[in-house]
Length: 451
Image (cartoon, rainbow, N blue to C red):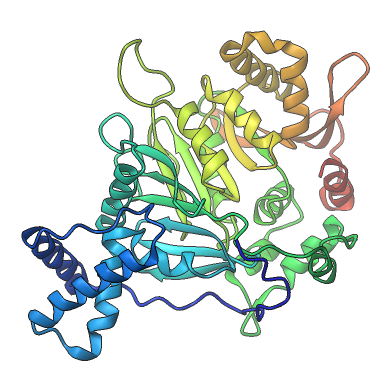
């Protein structure tokens, strides 16, 4: 491990990687077959002797020369093939960069967290390439990525943490995360200079102003224009909350009240420069996001039936896949506890749940979580709800002149637990009964208190 301290020049962006074409993939397969015929095995990925990897590179290069490959491209192609057969493919190029903190792959599209910033790198190969890569890594790590185990967690030789979810569990192609650790050790002086220990005074109002003033080439983004076009009504608050990932939201309501419709609409305000994960028991959400990890798994399995459940997948995603926000289509079973654990670890999460009132919805969330872990007790579960969940919105079916209308009934923030062990709810909005709290006169104060 190198302590680079101040010796590294601070980069502005990750290295550019040339995408793999179909001819590149065919070349990899062809050379792999030739290596088998010649009895040449790629070095074990835990091989620490660089000379053995270099020797394998030379063997690959020799095959390319024998096949009459273009001399100007031989070194590039030999490196691609060497990486593909002995490492983590073209992602090895990113692992060599000390400023790459995490690598994300979603359906062939790659992004990186690079020195604290999220960068899209585009589609670098067909999804089948990354699925084969995930299977290869699992095999090398002594794990299985087949059949009833469609996810794998493996530590790479360099200490990096590799996680992958493959189809059919992942419905939007192969999803891979590689988390790096400690390859660039920072001194305390460097952390001090870069603001690690400086107090940030940013308020919720400041966050909204930053969002509202965001421009792309001098032009306000489409998302910014959309949120500014909304009236000073509850939907503007919810859109702002989702767009800035300022808290975790649960949308409650009876069956057919429009919970999923509202969640779908709000998903259109999720920040595009952040990885998003969506989990469902059956495909219902309509999410438009350029970097989405999406899975469908049952809430429960009959005893003895192989497979994975929604709560198992949710645990893998929030602990290993590093999403900026998690959308759970509906909390209906054991995943309730994993949902709460995720929010208590700082993940921003959005979900729906059945309940005729906000209080009833919170009670149902407690009951579902307790059913999977009764030993925790109500007080512990209630504390998790109060700590992790920020806002509850209530949808309802209202009979209006003989026609059912689906309307927002209330928005409340959870501000801890009172002396009697009950939730302290602060209603920002009520459609009926008490006079409404003016949304944008007090909303930032409320959000400041729950953050």
